[in-house]
Amino acid sequence: MSNFNFAYGGDYSDDYDDPDDGDSSLPKTVVYSGTESFRGNRELTEVTFEQGVTSISFEAFYDCSSLTAITIPDGVTTIGQRAFSECSSLKAITIPDGVTTIGDEAFADCSSLTAMTIPDSLTTIGERAFWGCSSLTAITIPDGVTTIGKSALFGCSSLTAITIPDSVTTIGNFFFSGCSSLTAITIPDSVTEIGRAAFRDCSALTKLILSPAVTIGEDCFLNCTALITAAADKNMSTVSDLLHYRWHRNIAVMERVNALLCLKGSWDHVENQPSGPDSLKEKKMDGVEAPLKATEARHKIPKVLWRVILEFL
Image (cartoon, rainbow, N blue to C red):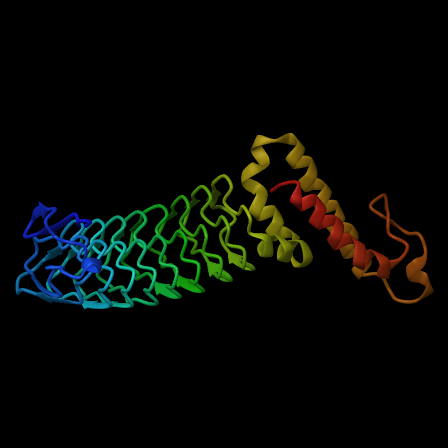
């Protein structure tokens, strides 16, 4: 017979039997006063809060895998580290105005959580706060948030929409890594730094708006295959923007960027050629011979760009 590592009233105990054995004494409903930890109570389905609770403590409901919904009462200002981590059945949670801090890993691996409303009072989102919330589809970060920890949305593979306010100045390392359903995002001009691998494996991302002045970390867009394809086919300047963080490190990269820009110049020239027999004559443009066959060039240049771009990534 296996045992839980379960704490009640702040004291850890190994005396609770595994509920799968049929003789569990774990409570299904509890009253929370602000200090208890119900860690590992996989029978828990309902929580009542006493009046005067101002914080949800460290690992208070960690791995309470039968808990499906919870309403945090008014008066709470802090949701502690790993407070609801691994509550795998949690689908809905209400966070009231007044909460200013969501701690590290507070909702990590809440794999059934589909949506949540974050109050305007919030200022800090901890590291890995929503790590692995694979069912989360949308989230709006309020204007008052100034600090968001690294990997905050790592592995939120169903996330399709997010709003980032002007109050945010830094996108941390691995922030959106693995958000494979995210298709578009606007980074406000207030953001001056995007961390390492921040958008890694965002394979569906096709539209990214950001300031050209922002500092971009290493491997920021690794495996963003749709974004690179869109850049190659439609907007060369985007490719330059995505890769500018590597320019100062490698002369060969500079040469390749120049090659890309030359190809773009050839492409623009072909697109502007008049139709008819004259368009097939050899012409000079800034000392470079223009392609003879416009139709053929239209088909070949994007493929050339794609092959060159792959060398960067």
